[in-house]
Image (cartoon, rainbow, N blue to C red; front, top):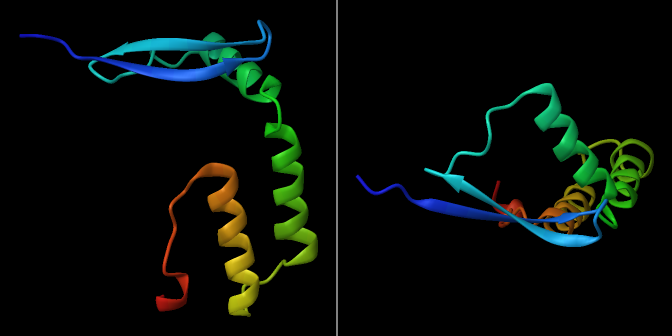
Length: 94
């Protein structure tokens, strides 16, 4: 049986270059403290990630802490879509 190989592209902040991980059968490496720490460091060192997280925290906890107004929810959804490409649509239909 042929095994499929999937590629995952991410920016390696320590080496300042894009990196490709090959996952056989679509599975990343088995989680371990070392693997988790490596991915955490890569995420933290990718330009813009920590700034986006700080902005989201401020938006969700300080500026618009409640979801009682549809306008507030739409602002949050648009921000999440922009930062993480979540593809959340039709919020007004919910």
